[in-house]
Image 1 (cartoon, rainbow, N blue to C red):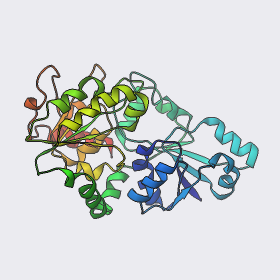
Image 2: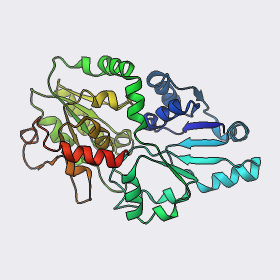
Image 3: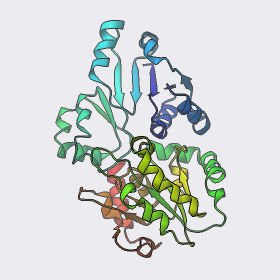
Image 4: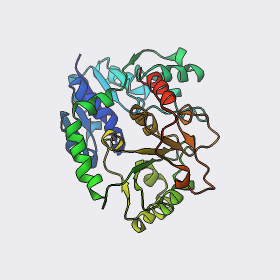
Length: 324
């Protein structure tokens, strides 16, 4: 079976999910955007990369060369019939998830799992969620893959740690405990904390912390005016950094002392390090929030944060459930 992975469109944050998969399977990664291609070359040199800005005109070539296609976006059902009818080719279209999170209960974010040829699933937690959402019994086929992204990072740890040191950590004037704030974007679940609490995270930053804000690119793309009014506050804090076009997450997490998030999948990634976690929460259900302390945003944020981890057992249990 000849396979290929795809990163179509401008979503460069998906590179950290599809590129490690392509490298692990030793299959080519096809990109359609110039920026994503540049980022993939820099941050995932282990991958056999192909740039196809005119992909829509090369579907016949794709059908001729490959039997199985992977992407971190839901495949539209009509594509399978199109390959069959136009190119007389039955191609298997596999959806690769882009992170484990607790989102999907307020809006039907996971419903398209039921329309995919095959889906990759990290572990038992996703199976439980799909059952709770009445999607599991509609799945055609699936494969449990575990945390292949962490394994990829561990295999190439020195390369990624050196990159992160050069591009992020070396820019701090002095070594201090590192707080990572990783808000999600404003999706259908309205799960982001950035627009309500991001300004406080920055403006209340004391001098005894270094702050990294790992931004979801859709925060800027979907709400640019509100985004820039908050992001500009970093200019007044020499011990704070915005990290945008740095797709790999694990080299950042490995040097993070304390995690602050909301419903981002980065929180699940951080579970593997068993370090303190803090959250901004809304009314949505979240298993992840049982692995740390939920902050009161009406009080000073940093006075509620310490470096002792009281949730190691819960973190280990949830990590094993999520990435079995």
